[in-house]
Length: 113
Image 1 (cartoon, one colour):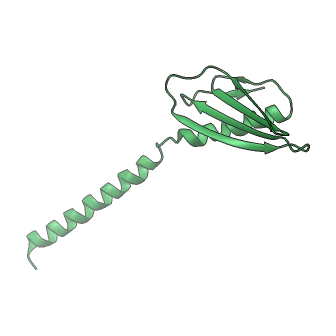
Image 2 (cartoon, rainbow, N blue to C red):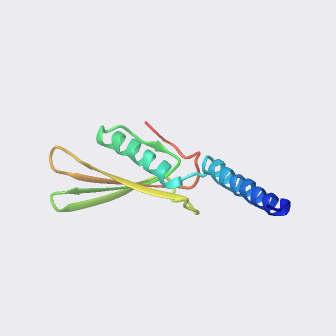
């Protein structure tokens, strides 16, 4: 075999491995804002169902469906830029359905009691 053919095959293999390695390393830095918003929605739903007050830097929309009546209220300030949205549901023992939707604008948003 010719040396230039072997060199080009080896170079191709090394470059392909470098591309795959950089792709795998980049996966560690990808941020999914929707998943973070969902974790905040779960925290907010837990606090709302347990009747605690909610302090937040995110925007929370709570919809309560009880015996055909729908009440909607919000907590927080609606952000100008929304990076992530998520929602979760809770069904209470009396049949009331609660939908908690969270909009976030950064990974520094929080939900606290």
